[in-house]
Length: 254
Image (cartoon, rainbow, N blue to C red; front, side):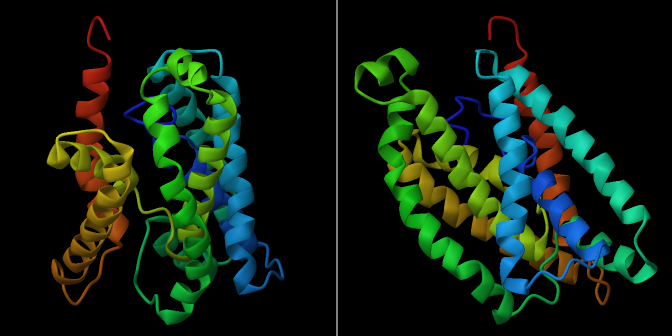
């Protein structure tokens, strides 16, 4: 998402993708929608993809990356407000379940949940690998990319749809674990010393998995026997980092 949108602050949690997916899942739980467990990822995809495409459509004529983030943050706030409304009409047991889920948690997740996500990963990850060359072309600028035969707008929409699909599958089973997607590409680029998507994509995936496992271990051990949701720890790390990145973006001349 960062390379496709040419925005180092792009991420599922900042463009409304995670919030849209969460709203759909919460609505299914609270309203007792008779939806099979296996259909949760497609349902979450509707919300995530709709939110992401709405932000992209609203900023398609703007070259200011901060505008994209501001609109994404505004839509995220709106979706979170709707989410609170949905939770407020739920029963007490629903609220307890959704509280744990909406903070992002791996507690109680087992092989059944992995089997739900696995088909989406098996389909999506090879497609991600195919995105490396278009992403490298987009880094050169729209004019150069189009001169080399790349339809930039269509490519951005397809890449955003792919990102939303993978995000929705994960959000459907463990909630919106914040800031992993934002931080890992930056860490990967710094460690590799380059921004070649052919290297950043797999390195970012490995770093993201490592960060998530480390945060989950911290969530389990820091206040044992109480286990805090893993999303609290990833947000505690990602929040300050986001402020630093945003400050860098708002410097004069950028």
